[in-house]
Image 1 (cartoon, rainbow, N blue to C red):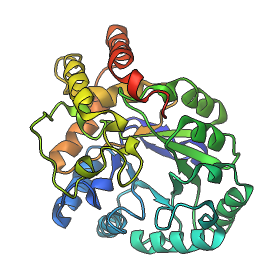
Image 2: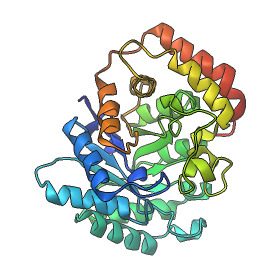
Image 3: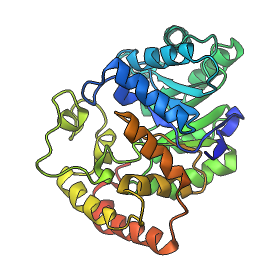
Amino acid sequence: MEQRVLGRTGREVSVVGLGTWQLGADWGQVREEDALAVLDAAVECGVTFLDTADVYGDGRSERLIGRFLAERPGVDVFVATKMGRRVDQLPEHYNLANFRSWTDRSRTNLGVETLDLVQLHCPPTPVFSSDEVFDALDTLVAEKRIAAYGVSVETCAQALTAIARPGTASVQIILNPFRLKPLEEVLPAAAEAGVGIIARVPLASGLLSGRYTRETVFSPDDHRAFNRHGEAFDQGETFSGVDYETGLEAAAEFAELAPEGATPAQTALRWIVQQPGVTSVIPGARNPGQARANAGAAALPPLPRETLDAITGLYDRRIRPQVHDRW
């Protein structure tokens, strides 16, 4: 699989990675053996980048990755985790003492001395402008608790503020055919600064797979059932903030744009990989088959110009009026 340098980390990662929120919580139950099978399948297909967070299943996702790596000492993967969502979202909680505590917990969960990459996990907007916060992150690097740091963001404005910080190695942002706004300023700014871009929510919580209908029922512990209007966390994390009915109609149109031999999900991932400035895309997977199919998107030929234009046109007609200015 193609490898790209992840911004200021200087490390190469696979262009298709694996997001592991679903291995922890909020996507329905995933058994431990199934989670390990997903990790196995992804790595066998060339995935070298795993993304997790300390709150996914209260550390379950991190611990599963730690077990996976301990049982396979020859596997060379880059693990990015996130911190900051274990407390009330007040800027004053983003301080050095908490950072040390949170990263120590993640180091234990993952079974490593130094974390490859720690990202602030969609913190309050004032955090991105705080010198004290970024000084504390620099201290973690100096103490070798972490090798590098980045941010996960909700908005383009937050991303641009973080990119301007000289120590920011990467920015994780929602980017998919239903969320095009980052293409305007964020990706060009990141490329100019040498900051990596990690594309998250790449399938709009599964909408872009084309598998869902009005009759689909999500389990009560799946955020697609309980967070459609931002009841538990930012609405953009669920279906990319798109109204479900609108998303279903747009997804049906998108599916018709998939080239022969590719699924709609693979087409969405291929579209993301093609965007200038993107380092890696991190789809989730609940079973080995999904992990293999996602990885297969990296081998697809580039989408032709007419398909790219059709995707932009679909966004402008169906999605832009709902979400573009919001994020």
